[in-house]
Length: 379
Image (tube, rainbow, N blue to C red):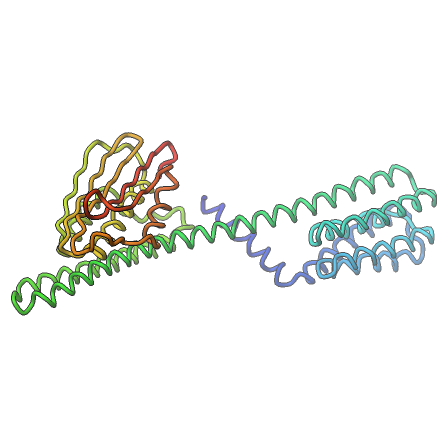
């Protein structure tokens, strides 16, 4: 969206917020403007009796409370209009004001409350024609009233749909943020805990090795802090399209991820075959997070002395990634569970028509296998 579009949208939201904060004031302005306009038109038509200005004001006054009590305002307006017609008054206000009130009922009240509105419309038309009013005006009233009610109903339905859509979007955004935070924090903490335990165990016998592990711990913690700051920066810039996008991890970061996990003591190899297509950053991030989560589970459940391998097979429109470990210190029957980590991997793969399988590897260990396919919408 351009800056001009953002400013326009901001202005509209500001006006809408002001009206929402002071609905009676906004409706009072509407009632006064409508009364002034219709009074002038009625005067030019010469249809105002001596007492006509009184009923004209009385007809518009209830509109000030039209949003607070839509149905009550409608019936009050109808009674005033009926009274005016029975006393011989005429003019467009008798048609337009009830229509505005009917629109308000349709806009703000449940649909079941619309059916009673038909009764005064029919009675008003009969009284109008019976009092010598033009039939064309009566038909115009019916048509205008029907259009107003349909418009109000449509707007109510549309706004309800938009509210539901926005709530779903917020829920999806919360899920996305939770996934990112889980992947970043869970992986980093697993590596940090493993490194810290290793440093405690190694320092008495090999101080140099202990210092190296602590330095690696510091580097891992700083990287986690950088990733969290990057995520927060992405959220802050999500509505500023003129800002440069914040880079996200991708395939080019897998070597760094593997090096980080190796630093925790895991004997890890990375095998890549094939040439990836133009998958887009979203697809690459999904692969990166799946590998990251699988390695996090390996560190947590197989221990730092396990052996593991990451196999990534790339094609123009597909990717196949497999993470296998030998079980390490994990008992043969143990399972890393199926908590938020596996759920997160499945959710990562789902937008790309992918699937994720996790279970015991042949013989011993654990295996995670993910297949993703990419089309034009990748990323």
